Image 1: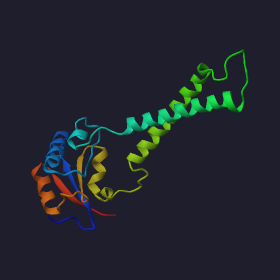
Image 2: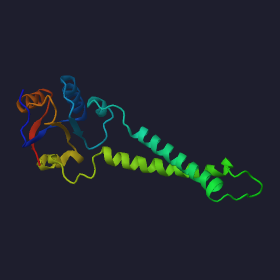
Image 3: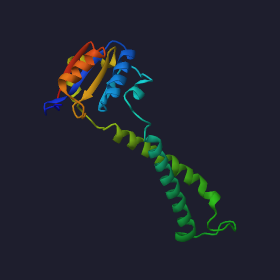
Length: 181
């Protein structure tokens, strides 16, 4: 098996409709390919599963951010009212937790929001100002009416000739070699 040279980022295949794209992605995944991506003009519900994508880590990142924010703000409120500036207001104890609920809630929401934003930003590999697939002229149609599947050359099973033939066997109307930028 020959692997890609340094001048190939992968192979881009165009399919006639979303069903053909899903079948091709499933077929390649069944063949052992893992480094694939799909581009469609609208969301295709079955596509992540066909590409072999598991659940997203975003909910766990948001949970961690929320727990960190809530516990940080609760601790800050407790420290400020009981240690740094102890004021006895209305005969309440210095660590009166009901008064800490609003800042704790706000801290939870704020940190969870930041964690969601940064998590999506990082997992999407942003900012990426250029991707080699943009060198293919036909790829401009990806946002209007075409369905594309990219098999990256970093995939361990990638062999240019065999992968191209397999894409054609799976119904690709056209296959392009994506130059490495």
